[in-house]
Image 1 (cartoon, one colour):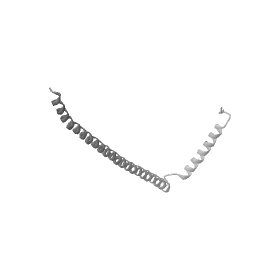
Image 2 (spheres, rainbow, N blue to C red):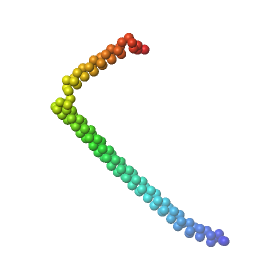
Image 3 (cartoon, rainbow, N blue to C red):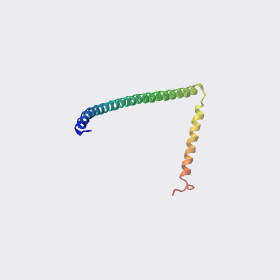
Image 4 (cartoon, rainbow, N blue to C red):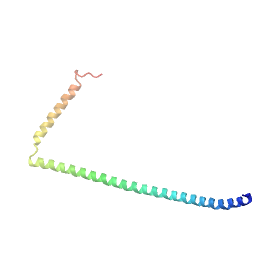
Length: 116
């Protein structure tokens, strides 16, 4: 092979190959950027929906908790009004409980328990 025929063939073949490589590289990088933007947008959208779902669940939980609290208060009030609960017995139990608590405090500060 003669160098004078090989060199022009090499140049004419390499120029379109380089141009094709550069255009393919540019297209690939632009597609990657586009995919990156789309992924970020989808993640932001998913985060927003999850935050709203979490807030909704928290509000539902608070409502359920308030409803249960109201139901227990209503049941307690109904029990008092219907005579199911003995108010005098409850007050006596509270008095006895306070006496036991006072005795426990005295035992803590007595000579039997030494603080080191």
